Image (tube, rainbow, N blue to C red):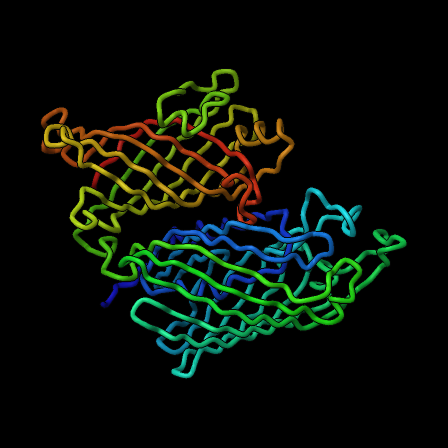
Length: 467
């Protein structure tokens, strides 16, 4: 089925801001294979991948990590698991991208025991890269160049890869082979031992440049029209000089991937691209919830108090368009939103802007909706704050935990049709309601979100109308 492939400059704005550096990573990871499997033209999706991998470091065991999938594939811009960028050229056979990506490498910030004890933290970084892909009937050739732009490692990496897709009625099966050429700066930072870190059992060491190789097998399985399961196995073999490092264990690095993604636009002409679909304008104002007043408590009305001791507020505007209207002829719509809010931290922290991009489900099939239309909504997506909000700084400081500007975003809400209440045709597509603006790190389970355990909640009231 054909698709009209649209993009938004606002999506690029969000993308360019989402370069916060995270911590507490264990191993070397590239998500190119996941990104490529899910990059259908004209798509926007949400999902997750749980990755279990063996750490390359001695005594570090293995780690299970949650990788949220926020996916968008437009004509010129794209957003994937850990990568954002611009398509310089894109045809059926060839594609050339420039992108920014998070490098999810390093060793843990906490509990650096054994051979890593006493060493400086090796953090993740952000790379500027360029990638080329050539798609042919016999397979796809890939090449990418990445360079650290955050002055963490100052390293450079060149990746060359080959993959082939076997497509069945529901399955896509992809074997993949990637070779990675890493310079001395990159390997010395992540796998070396500085002279000041040397001990009797951990001598100073610099592995220098080297070549890693990864062999993988990945698959997707279509369960429903738009729901796909994701799975994969990979094995990475580190360069011999890297394996000689006193902090690196010998042997192959295995990894297992399991997940799912719901695609809102790649299997049909999404309502987003329909010129007759409405554009929603939403304006809102909110206050920080009181201490201990978490999202679940607010939604169930067991706690709706505001923080009056250290009051902070948000004021914002969001633009939305439907992706799916009346899913399977149910009273259920999915609307994509992008919004900008201003946070007033009342002198407690630096005021700043926040960008939220999310997909929201609306259910409106209540028995009384024939008289007063009522919508129950739940949004899920990504949030980037110019400055970490005071509510997050204070709550994380009490627990001696890290903060992150980039976090997961949830947005439950309930509203009523203003036109139905006042019996006004002019206000028939205007809604008044209440919601919760919630940022979180998904219980410290995701490297991509800084392994943050906690977040913030703002109770807000809003007015939304269809333009």
